[in-house]
Image (cartoon, rainbow, N blue to C red; front, side, top):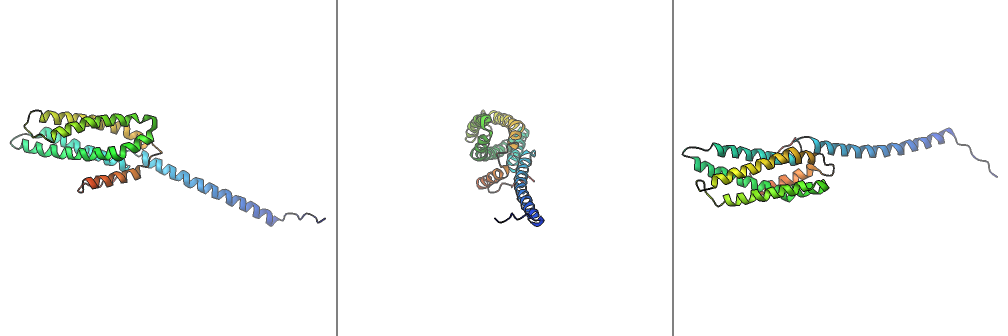
Length: 204
C-alpha cells in the first residue's frame, strides 16, 4: 500500500492563497453592492438635490411668483396683466399636473406601499385645481368671479405645495426602492415634450 504523501509548505500556502482570494472577491462584490445602495440612498436623501423633487419645486416657485404678480396687478394695464398671468399660471399648472400624475405619483405610490394614501389625497386636490383652471380658461379679467376663482386656485396650490414640500418630498427622498435620478430624467423628458421652451432643472 502506497504511503500518504505529506502536504508540502508550498501546497498549504497555495490552498490558503486560493481561499483568501475567493473570500476577497466575495467581500469586493458585497462592498460594491453596499456602496451602490449607499450612494443611491444618499442621492435620494439629499434635501432638494435630486432631479425629481427639484423639478417639481422649481415649478412651485415659478407659479407662486405668478400668484404674487397677480395680486400686484393694478392701474390701467391691470386687466391685460392679469390675463397674461392667469394664462401662464394655468399653462404651468397643467404641465406640472401631468408630470405628477403620469410619472411621479404612480412611482411614489408604489414605493410608499401602505402610506400611498398621501398620493390619493394629492390627486383629490389636483381635481379641485383642474376644475378651477377649466373655469378660468373660458373667462376674461373683469368678469364676475374671475379674480375670486384665481385667488382660490392660488390658495389651493399653496396648501398643496406646502404639504408636498414639507411632508411628501422628505418621505420620497428616504425611499430606497425609488431611483430619483431615473425618475427625474423621465419627468424632465415629459416636461420638455409638453413645453419645448422649458428650462432644464440642474439639481447638482
